Length: 228
Image (cartoon, rainbow, N blue to C red; front, top):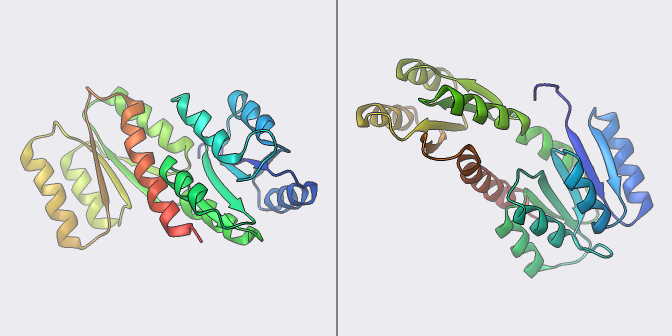
């Protein structure tokens, strides 16, 4: 991230849980805030910017799933949600993953796992190769705010060089590029046997819609990896 600060909202109705997580995460260099119920969490998310929300599913007034769903209905960029629960709640877990949570974890909370999840999530390299400079700058700004290490390529040759030198986790390129360029990208990735995930967009697609596709994929991928 540009300012290298990750902002986290911790939501739990147990004071001991909140204070412990705040203390540990602050020691790790994160910037934390907290809320004691879902209603306060929702209000804080509406006026503040957080990168992650760590929230108990079963909350007074407004539960964790309702907080997440309400924010998604606003159709604005939202934090990555990490849910935790002391009970086996398969239906709520399924709904959380479907909505696009980052992870659904079982209590007792393993804070070291949350720390690893957050640090791992922001460490993935992202390569962007688009035609529109304005669209490129907007998307890079958004991806940067999510914590990704983003690299911009200005030509097909530079894109292919980058792909050969670094195993990028994600690549976003313009679907309006000539077919030969698109084929060379896919051929290069296949020949290197890398695990690069490709996303396509163009100038007719809004930045918000392009990012929504990416985030839905990332959330689903991470939720499946870290749900326990």
